[in-house]
Length: 191
Image 1 (cartoon, rainbow, N blue to C red):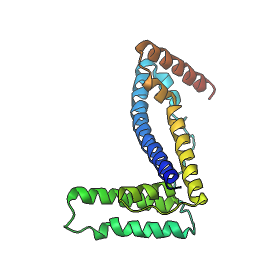
Image 2 (image 1 turned 30 degrees about the vertical axis):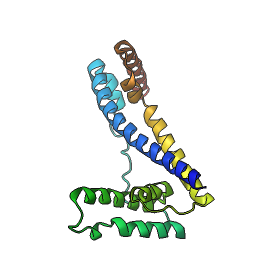
Image 3 (image 1 turned 60 degrees about the vertical axis):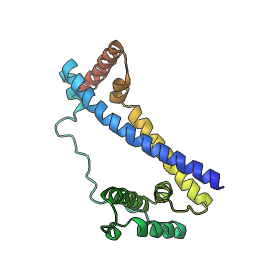
Image 4 (image 1 turned 45 degrees about the horizontal axis):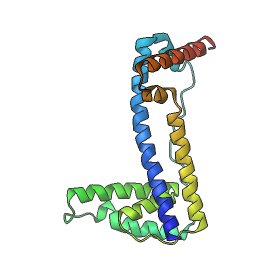
């Protein structure tokens, strides 16, 4: 079972890091796509903007806190928090060690807020803490998080901006941009 746990944790870490990379690429893609669309067809770019008077997205005032009663999660969380809590970092740690432990604590806090076994175990690996035996519920939690991460990756990679950005042939990019402009213009005429 230990080899299986190691594999599922590596999968979780891989997809989590991939999502971070995809988000970064997507951010670049969005900016470049908007600029290219503006240069190519300004009215099409305007179609990307919500119409005047459209309701603004709701602001989330506070995060929803997941309530759970998983004693093994809480026990491992406390064990890890002792190793990386910012209040415990004195001058005996180098600046590099402090930064590493600070990142671990941020991940640990997020894992606790989201009841994310994958992130909790990633922190345990980072801090070289022995990982406990995982129950089927723990494994299901990690698999559900991996599935959610994969869905997010798919949404980013499926965007027009991302698809356009990753095309390598300039002529293909130009044709794709024209198709996107036509779609945006068509949506503008339906308003």
